[in-house]
Image (cartoon, rainbow, N blue to C red; front, side):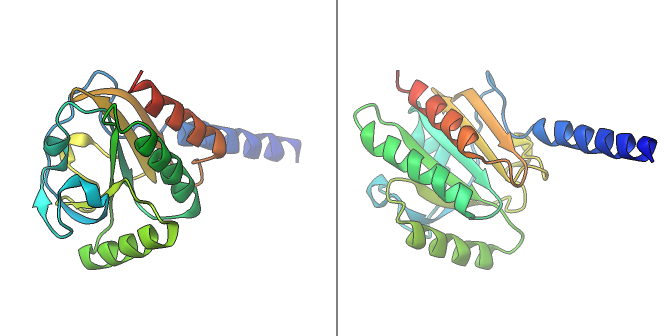
Length: 187
């Protein structure tokens, strides 16, 4: 009986360690390449009409950017994005910007869910897009299927910080760490 309990605990701990070590997206020091997206909604001041296809990364140029890849619009993502939205508004002079790539398998349903998510949470300064490579984002970005959320923070086209989180890992502490890294982009 003891052996079974110890074995179960070891399995749970090893699973937790594996989940904590999700690697997804470009890593610090990597260049952020170009990729095509379709803007769904958000950031009415960015000069991009909803429904337009473009390279949003290219449009951002050398600006400090919080780029997010998300598989669903849950409440923890909403908390993170509301805080990022506040930082983007606060750091307009430094040109901090953000865009969220919503991932999925069916473009029409992803676009519909994205519009509802943005409307529900009143996110104003972040653009929401759907990448051409809908399921996992651009293949060269290596967005992990195990990552529910991947946050890539970059400036001058180079990754400064990366946060990859499995489902259920976007906690208040992780949100605070991501927001702190976003603030470092404009220091």
